[in-house]
Image (cartoon, rainbow over the protein chains, first blue to last red):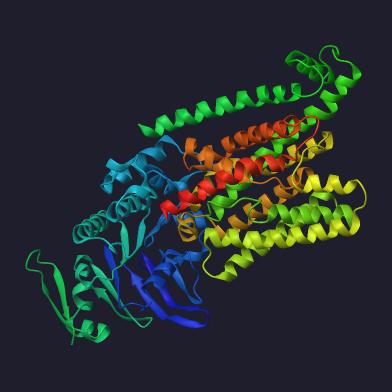
Length: 258
Length: 340
C-alpha cells in the first residue's frame, strides 16, 4: 500500500444529488498534485473529502493505508492542514494570531501557547513571506497578503499533507505565481500538497494532475500524461494547445473557444 | 513589539479590575441610607465570618449583612455571567450582535420563571428559566435559519420576534394571575432588578459562575478556532457543531440561573465584551476573564446607581443598563456598517 491519500469508490450526495460518482484516486505521497476540472465538476467536494472534514455518502478515504475517519479529530488536524477559499473573520486578529491558530491541534487541553508554538508560528510566517506583517491586523491586508498568512497558519500546523482549495483565486498574476512557487517548494521539501486549480496555466507547476469531469475522474497521473490537448478539449469544450512555455520551459496550456 | 505591549495592557487591566471590584463593592455597601463607613462594613463582614466583634447596631448590621452585601455579590455574579454569556455567544455564532437579551434568551428565561412562579408548575425556578432560555434560543436560531443565510442582523431580528412573542405570553400570564401589590413586584423583576437578592441568590449565582463560567474560561482558546468559521474550526481538530451546542447550552443554563434571580437585564452581555476587546484584542484567553471582571463591575455600579440615585425610590437596574447600553448598541451597529 502506498502512502499519501487514497480514495476508494468515493460517492458524495448532497440533498439527494450525486456530486461525486465513485472516485478512485491515489494522491502520491510526494510532490504537488493539482486537481483540475470545469466549474461544478466536484473539485471542492472531493477536496473536502480528502481533508476528512466531511464524510462520504459511501466509499472510503485512506491516509497512509488507514481509514481517515478512524483518526481522532486532533490527530487528523496534526497531519492534514487545509486552506479554504477566502475565509474572512469578524475578529481583529493580528497575522501572528492567525498563524498561532494553526498550533491548536498541537496544544494541550487548556490550549496554552508555548514558546515553541510561537517559534513555529513565526517560522511559518517567515516561510510564507509574511513575517513583515506579523503584528498587523489580518483584515487590513490585501488578498495576496492574506493568502500568504493563511498559508503560514496551515504551515504552523506542521502537516504532512497540505490541501488547498483554489489557492490562487482572486490573486493577481504576480501573487498567483508566488503562491504556486511556495507550494512547489513545500512539495520539494517533502510535504504532500494537493491543490484544486481553476487556472490551467498553473497546472504545469504540478507533478501529478487529477482531472475531474461531472463528478467522475477523467484521468489521473503525471501532468504531461493527463493534460493532453485532446483531453482538455473534450472536458472543457475548448480548443487546446499544450507545449513548453517559452519563458519557463514548463508545460503550458493554451486554450481558445472552438 | 505589539504583542508584548498588548500582554502588558491585559495584565494591567486584570490587576486594575481585580482591585477595583472589592473597593467598589465596599463603596456600594456603604452608599445609601444609614451612615456607614468602609471600616464599619469590613468590621461587620469580619464579625459575621468570626473575626472580631460587631460594631454596628443590629438594624445597621441587618442592612449590611442581610441586604447590601448579598445584593452586591449577586450584582457582581450576574454582571460577570452575562458578560461571559455574551462573549461566548458572539464567538460561536460569529455574530457581534449576539447576547442573551437580544437573542431572546432572557425573555424565554423570564417566561419559564413566570410559569414556575405563577402557574404553580412544580419545577425549581432556575430549571424552569433554563428551559425557557433553551426554548427561546432554539426558536431564534430556527427562525434565523429559516429566513435564509444566517446574518447577524437577521439573527437579531429573529431574536426580537421571539422575545416580543415570549414577552407577550409572559405579560398575559401575569395579567391573568397576579393580583394587588405583587403585580408591581413582578413588573420590577421583569425589567431586571436585584432588589430582592439575598443570600440564597448569592449561592445560586456564584455556583453558576463556578460550575459554568470557570470551565469555559479554562478552554477559552477553543473559541478562537471559530474565528474563520466552522470548516476551518473542523480542520483545526474541533467539532464545531458539538462545541457550539455545548457552549450555547451552557450559556442558556447560566442565563436561566441569572434571570431567575435578577429578571432580564439587557445590554451587559452585549456591550461589555465589545469594550473589553478594545483592550485585550479578540483572543478569548484574555477576553473571557477580563469580560467577567468588567461585567461584574458594570452591573455593580449600575445597580448601585439604580438603588441610590432616586432614594428612597428605587429603579429597576435593567432601566439603567438599557439607558446606557442601547446607545452603545447603536454605536456597535454603526461600526458594523462601516466595516461591512
